[in-house]
Image 1 (cartoon, rainbow, N blue to C red):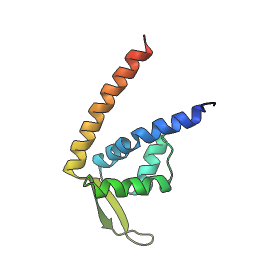
Image 2 (cartoon, helix red, strand yellow):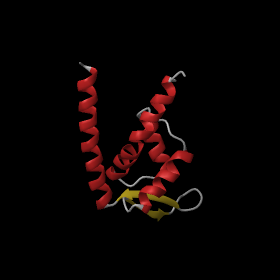
Image 3 (cartoon, rainbow, N blue to C red):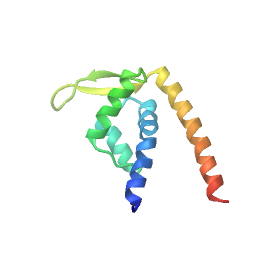
Length: 110
C-alpha cells in the first residue's frame, strides 16, 4: 500500500484547522468568506463545505457566537466571534500545538 504525500498533508491541515479558524475569529468578528480568504492567504485551502460544519460545531460547543449584520448586497450576513470560552480553548490548543511542534522538531533533528 502506497501512502500519498498529498493525503497526509491534507490530514495535517485538517488537524490544525479548528485552531486556525478560532485564531482568525478571536482577532475580530468574521464573515465565513473572510475566514476562507484568510486561510487561503496562509495556504490552508478550505472550501465552504468544510468550514460551515466546523463553525456550527464550535458554536454548539459554546466557543463561538454570531450576530446578524445588514449587507449592502443581499440578505443579512452572519458574523462569528469567539466567546471567552472560545478564547480560553484557543489558548489551550495553542499551548498543546507548541508542545507538539517542539516534540516533532526534537525527533526530526535526532
